[in-house]
Image (cartoon, rainbow, N blue to C red):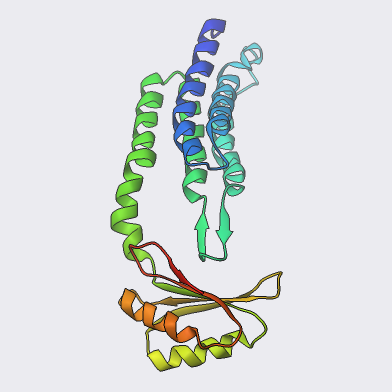
Length: 235
């Protein structure tokens, strides 16, 4: 039977390692921060401790067979529901946010299982690797991958006019390769048109298009966002 101090050690280690990952996510102001990651890790550690040692009193019976891995498997699958709550689809950017946080929660649950089962080196090593992935690789990913995958964009806000037809008329005169056009109606009654272009479109072409949009009746604002730069706005 596992000793009480060993249980405490495993739970505290799980909390510490989960907190290391949670500090990074909390620093970026994600919903799942320090406390969430610590709770997931400690809960997973407790689950594996209960699975491995919680039924020792019935193991002496010849008709009882215990599989300690069954609760661990349920933890791994069950955390998926928690991770799903951190995933959001942002219509404005047409992207999904929160996948990294969901994956981090899933990984932290595995760290808790490792700490709870006494695999201390595996738990610490996994924490170090996950921390490097979350904290150190993000700037590299943002600079070399995300900037290349982002489409140039022009956003037009209109009020009281047939939004899409007016924008398409101006767009047709500039002959720019279009990737996607998104029309959204706001609660205020305004129409917002997001025009995404192929990555070959340059900043100067977007600026010329934004100037062309000024002639549209009812224009509230127009902004353009070329890859690798901050959004430029004009009214």
